[in-house]
Amino acid sequence: MAGKKRRVSIRIDMTPMVDIAFLLLIFYMATTQFKPPEAKAVELPTSHSQIELPDKDIINITITKYDSIYVDYVEKATINIEGRDVTTTVRVVRTSDKYTVSSEINRARAKNLKALIVIKADRRASFGVMQDVMKSMQENHLQRFLIITDKEVDKTT
Image 1: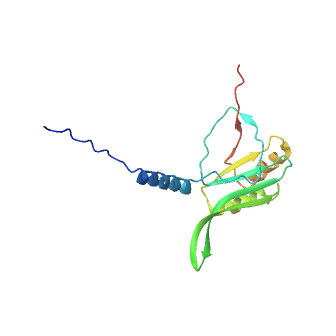
Image 2: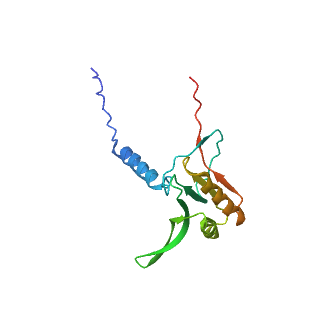
Image 3: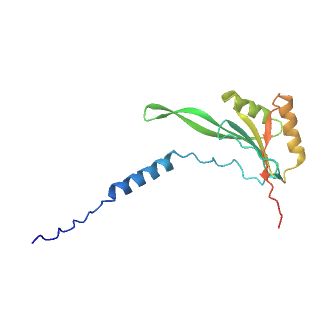
């Protein structure tokens, strides 16, 4: 009499798969570049136009509702860590006014000639300050720049 063969249960160990999943998660978290914080938070005016900004090579000019002007950009710097020189990127934020804003922009452009000039002006900033900034830039032959706005939402119901 031939007996039935017993089934052998198969046990799959999930530990290596979980380890790989966590390693991949940590890798992507460590290598992702997040948007750098702004020099000052501003409430942008709205418009219908929409243009994608590049992720790097940008010189930000921020004009707050109190008519303060900030110029910020990212530059490469070499720092010494435990006797070794390491090249990294450093975010530079400079306070400016309508008289010195173009010299600050030129200082930033000297570090990166292909940088795009982007103006973020608060919707409550006075028009005169914005006009003075653009006039100062024009006098220093800085005629290519973008003015950033929020996308206007259609209110159709």
